[in-house]
Length: 595
Image 1 (cartoon, rainbow, N blue to C red):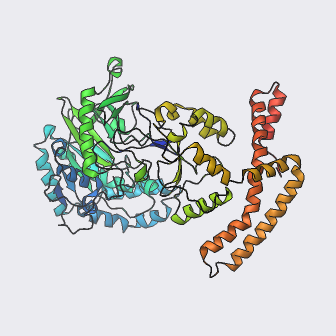
Image 2 (image 1 turned 90 degrees about the vertical axis):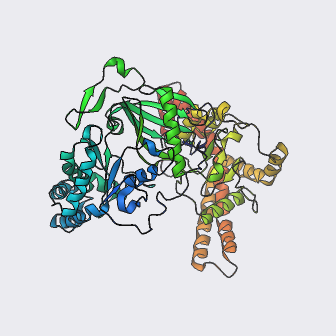
Image 3 (image 1 turned 180 degrees about the horizontal axis):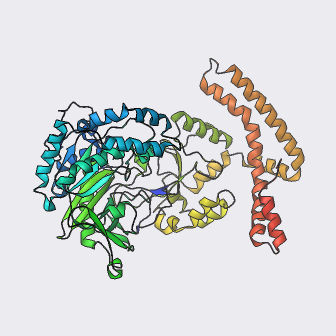
């Protein structure tokens, strides 16, 4: 994720110093691990065509993600009136075409090479084949039904979009990968449907999802002649804040926003407080509008209109209410496309799950409107990083090992996010909101400069403003006495003695370290060969700890000597009196062989 952008007056809940979360205003919960279509395995009546407002929506595997979502929205009170009319052209319509392509010589030649430099050229041939497949009588009847409906639509125009079963899901959106045709007339419907189908064999699809035999469906919707359009995320994807709606908007149809051809206006809206947090006016140098004879055309936007916001506060408020209703219907953050007509009518064009939010444990997410907490993912650091989730065994072993090295064997790391340091479900965190009650972020940054320059820079940034994130109080049970009691259990005097030994006699202590490392390696090898005994895994694990402890004890002690030396070298590297002094310090900071 990009660095978080602190748009709220309240602190943001940040993990890995890069993402924030709190609960959505709808109260519809947090980002759960729910399926987009919970009934997708249920039997359904097969058909080539279905109205989007059908009383019994079809599953994703039948109509694709986009159409299934629109059908669901049609059945949602408070949302359905915003959705334009239209049809889902189902997987069954395209099944014969898909089978014909994947059974062809062209496919046999292309499939093994889709991931090679030859892939784009071979995909051109597949798309050409897909475009010229014959229409059956049943397919023709379906298109005729849609054409008759289009005669009653404003301007007799439609938007034809892909709706593949794998598209707009919880794991991948395929946004912008498939073809879309806008301003399609009844006469141009067949060509538009063919072009959208052919795009399923585009090399971009295989680059995004890997080589696979695709399935396809399409959505044909009433064309909305938009004056302003864009995208709205019910949770801010830049910082994963669930209390914030992020909107990108421009003039005309939303395609210029989605494809990045303009610098759109950007708005951040507080869904809980109902107010605008941030507004950035983009240049919006052009707009895509419907052409008089169908299709679309690109028009230049004058300098005066470019400088004006494309959405008013009242429009943002209305959009936030609609987006929150969509979020509530799905029970998860949603990415929506919307449009305002020249008459000021708001229309909802599609909705899909946001796939880029940083996941947090349920217990770590604060209720809507409450102060955010700042979390630091303890296992993300330069040169010592693991970004994969810990299994239960990983976390138990790692925690026990860490505590044993600190002289706290038998202790337990808490799992409560209210504590300063705790184990999450799959990661370890520091509650920086509590930490900021003790020392400020700049102090942390100064201590971490030599360890992780990137983290130190984040701590110095606006995203770690202590006044914004600091807890109102420390957790219960945390006091000077409890901290002192914990420190007394740790072998600090032993560490001090070993550190002094490194400083007084580095070569002799290094020889001792090498000898201990050799013994440790031999002990570990013997334990590996012997394996777990009848005493059980915990006993075996204790033996492993005992084998490595003398080595790690010396390694931790030498840090007392190394860190001050490197801090001094770093100061000389930056502030040395002469160029030679700075260059030598820089070279020494880089280390050397056998260092």
